[in-house]
Image (cartoon, rainbow, N blue to C red; front, side):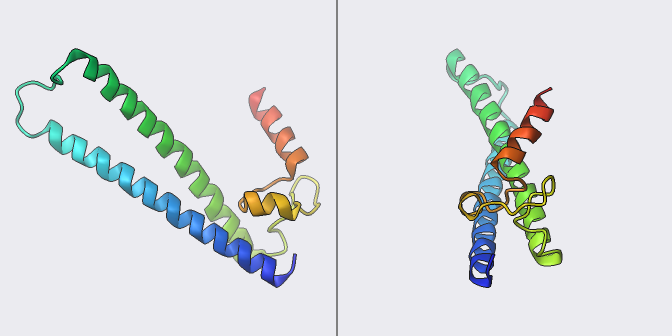
Length: 128
């Protein structure tokens, strides 16, 4: 990997980190405003229509799932940035095989730890 490619991937990581941080901030703000709304002194927490209760719960579950996924991706991005800055020779190299991760894969997922075959092995191990 040359310096221009490394710089481009670093910028992609930083841009994606900023995007995810923004999403997480918005989700946290939404959760805070929902909590404040629950504490506004209403005698009942029931929505105006019983069907809204299911919709509200579904929305909370979706937001929780999105938050978990984004937080996991953020951790992967931070780990990739750490590899890039502290041990640049390890960035873009599959630790399982020691082979370079193809640039096409890094362009799509700059925080990738493994090549496609290595990722398949990791996912199979996690599934069993």
